[in-house]
Length: 135
Image (cartoon, rainbow, N blue to C red; front, top):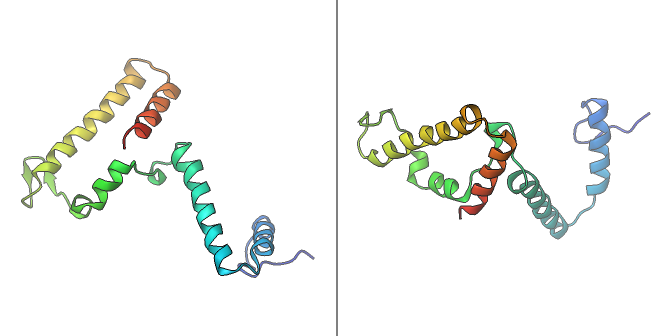
């Protein structure tokens, strides 16, 4: 009989194999080894998904450093209720600019793909190159 995972003994057979494999590899690690392993796993994940690829599930894509900086400022925590020029709350005039700029840029990209007939792979490559060039 195959060994059951200690982490999730209820998991299906395929998961049992992976869980058991990882449990064996990770058992007995010291604090320093755990810390190094976590750093290495996160770096590998970040490199593969965030730097070397584009995940096609939009909800999981990472932000560029500039977008992350904007989100971490007070901008990311403020609701922007209402249309540009007709906001419910005051003090969001700068958001009007961003709320109009974003769909205009999506329209440019969409035009490149649908109207101009550009190769979608080329458009994605250009987008990745642009994202990498922005500090």
